[in-house]
Figure: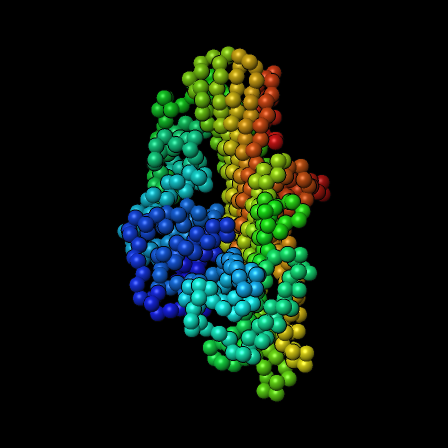
Length: 249
Length: 273
């Protein structure tokens, strides 16, 4: 409880880049739904707008993708999910459902512009047929099980496959996060499923990871982090039913 | 400063040491406030003279040295380190003995330390009871379930006697920090960590001495906290996960399936009139 005078006289002032690194660390570790409160605190604690802006510029893009933030697209066509699978570059993300590219401002967490995607960013018509039916089945499932969740299906390999007999991979992403300050709680559920379809061997291999984070903070601070991996392989009979099977782990 | 405390409350508890270190580096002028207001898992030091462990906290700290409750000496050595008065030191020694037994009975292991001091206003006295247990396989864990697990309890009691020295007014603030990590094959890594704080006030007769009362209050509080932890850690977080994703096929009044079924029935009833 006692402080000696000598240790209070001289402290080393941190270098600017060290302060930015600290600010960035706090932002990246913000619990689900609380990034704006954390941002407000970091701004005050850094006591320097310039340093905060730098930290925010570095942290927000990483934070948004890691937490799979979804943003409203300005043309009213729905939400775009920001994930590593749909990332074209630092500020442009593909939305496969509407075949468009969204331009986003990470720090403000808004989508500023939407334009149709280039053909080279989209899968072939053949693969798109599968992606589309998976997406349709997925949306219904997400609606039942996760109220308010967002989902998307990306083609992550073999998007140029033109006909049967080849191999391609679809990645299914589901993200649901909630934040209820008056109930002192928040959380986030993320599922990522990679489905590798090999038509020649007639197999579909499923690899998934579910990560859950829950936060409760009435008179305390309790956080749960858990994740689980899954693996399965099925033989293709009728492709669509197999893809539907994959949605009920 | 308030922004710093808010950050401490929001950061994942498993990273709280790093969060505190970062804030101390950014705001060195506020270091004593930051250290005294934020709860950190307790650190352990070794008292060579008595061959025992003791716990470190702000209340037995003087500068960068910490005082052992067994030998009352500072480590690293300090010539003029703050010491409690002879009367308080006697109480402190007794308390350490008593709580060591308490700890052994309830925790089957672990480390405990009690520190007593006179508060700034000079009235009455204050004490803190610290208990730490490492329940992982490498520590004291007996059942082999936890990969990592630790319980840190910090109880701070302020005691004031009334004028006739018949009754004592006790004000207890307790914080328990619990962290557990399991990693079994079937369910993957799972980690739960955090802290909860509770307060309690009581007026008790001093005929049996202060230590008896303090012991009872701490015991009562720890039982309450232990149950509270059960409800909060497991109950509440389970609830949060359920609101994120419901297990399908479960029918309950509040589930999505249950509610849409309710609506359907009500509509049908309305139509059949």
